[in-house]
Image 1 (tube, rainbow, N blue to C red):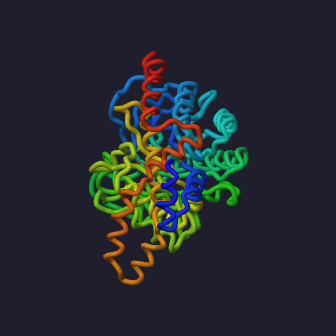
Image 2 (spheres, helix red, strand yellow; image 1 turned 90 degrees about the vertical axis):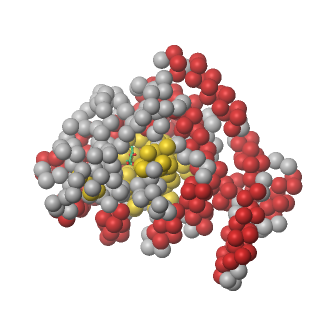
Length: 410
Ligand code: RNT
Ligand code: ZN
């Protein structure tokens, strides 16, 4: 980085070193499921629950060994503080029934994370399974079905608590269910009452240590095959989380395409002191494309910085593209998340706020546009250098080599 760069930012009241420090401390939870198209190790076959991966890029990881080998490759290129986001289907050892998946099945992951000083987050897997009867789980009219998934989630609380204890950092358990209906419902309230009751049973089912872990609920607007009604809607979970004092999770792909998800963040922080995210990129629908450094992503990062929420948020990524090199997909998306946060940290928010509060909207617009051409790219390269990481171009070459040497031989 040229010496002048620091001075350029100083003129706006920005300390580049402080920005780099903050960025490095910001934890990003990397979703392991980008590496194997949300397949997991249970050999359950088809992905169901209104989500889908498309593409058939060669060399997909088929087991714990291959997945962690690919993850290690990806980690070489992702700077900053990292966690790995796991799903129940990534249980290891002797595979057990989904409802029985507990801490025992995640010991290998804990050892893996410990060795690399990573954190872990957890998700019960409530899809791709025969106990989703007619696509319904926690909201099912059948008590047996509900109890099956309640048990799965209660065990999940124990797994998440174990992650936090073993790794000495906070962990998140996020609940997402695909429950919904293809066509106009006859009853909308019934399933929601049942979901509410099931969630209460989960939270009452195990007294987890609230100081070291959080539980979040993830809403959605619709999925493939459940176009008309989603039980776990945004309003449902907003109210549920607020009344139960748990966390909401905003997946940036789970809203109407013209809705601005970034705009929701400050409204949430006006009432909650923490928030969880699945940062994704919807293209026309909840398509889970790899994160690009586009305006939507920048807007989310800007709000996180402006709300002073980097430390109060669980920032997880959630996309799955099977049509390109999966490791590159994970790395490019994660680097883009970090680039967006870096740019947000290099923005003179105080100057902008002052201008807005003094009704100087011309100044706001001018300044917003002016800072776009500041040399943040040099700061990014400096960030990589400080962590002994190669730049974007070299990263691509290295992953291509791994593709040739490892992936194409599988
Ligand atoms: C699905 C949700 C959910 C999943 C992952 C695999 O629409 O976004 O979070 O993508 O849990
Ligand atoms: Zn999600």
